[in-house]
Image (cartoon, rainbow over all chains, first blue to last red; front, top):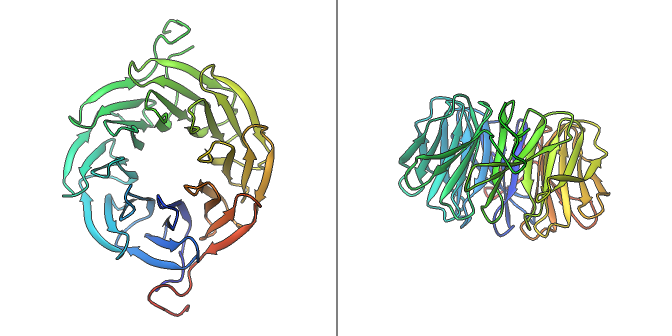
Length: 182
Length: 182
């Protein structure tokens, strides 16, 4: 039944070529819309909790959603079918995003970890587990080699995508102005 | 004093060339970090409320932040100085983003509006005021001609950037499968 979201819409973004929009909602669905006609093209149904984010991959053929149901899911944008479920997180997911080349996905979770997934096989590649509180965002670097995570633990951390290892933690120290740490 | 965030970090993103990271925090600041050395380069101080988002513009010389203090602010990334305050929203801001060409900024607010600003003059260009509840996200189309907003009013809406007028509302109806509206 395509009759629009039944609860708050929390995110809306265009596809890379601007022809589609994907929305994420507290009604447990994401929806694909034709950006020119505003017609609802498809409903992405399967999550058993709020959908916190929904974004297209770089080639616009796939969408990844992140949900309160502890999973992320990959969808075929054309057919609106679920391709894979990314299962492993132990608490809610706050976000999910494709790497710039579309081969990896990073998810951020209330379980204090971010995770890297192989977008083709839907297998977990690495668990990024140094944060001591909820990881609320995770983003790839433009070249896809690094990830930066933001956490309620007051730090951000940079990770190496190839190894899954933490490169560094952003928690201050001497900066340009040479102020001593107190 | 550059010694890292004093409260939850809620967002962290790379600059377009990957050399910098900007973080947003509940400690009322955003901070710029060197992505290679992890040094804190500068603190963006001035907001009088949680900073909900902080992102670079397309040319990486500017950053725009959105805050609970009802303002967005534009900062010079190199000098970490506040260039302009975007004042007009009547409630908290959830997000702010540059247009792809860097000439416009869109903000999303709990006052049920999104607003378009001239990024050079910091003047309000248009108030997008059709939503009946909080606007929690606003994003430009890849070509910069349209904006899509997401709202707790269960709809997403598409707006024309040039005129500030609503093009359409995404709330369902007959889609590909021809299901009648109930």
